Image (cartoon, rainbow, N blue to C red; front, side, top):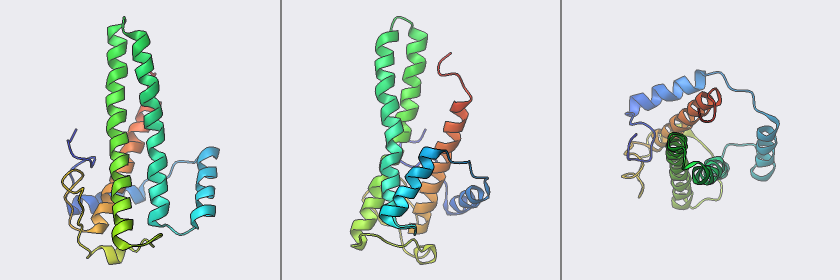
Length: 176
């Protein structure tokens, strides 16, 4: 695991390939709660993809990890006599914490972009971002990237890794 906020250390071409791979990956079927969430976002923020809308999604994306962390610490308290189980729970907490921190970086980066541009809702226009240099107070902590387009490719790549880890975990027993 990298000590930086980004999940992976891809160069510009690697980010482009990751974006292409994500776009070619079959979408999962959303459940009712997700569909309701997306519809509510459309009602409050409009149908276009905006920075403000993505910011809200990143805020929401942290909640499952925060909830899991709280429940896991309670579980560790009740399983300390079974060291192996307590250790497996703790290891899962560390994974969830890294994902939660990654979502926090996404939120901070989006908030920074919104503030720097002085906008309430910005339209996502990737061709303009291909030439706009990425400049962030968080770059040293998250990732050193060339352009704003690369920032959004990195965030997309991080989200794909979150999805893959979650899907892999769904097929496993909670703790064996």
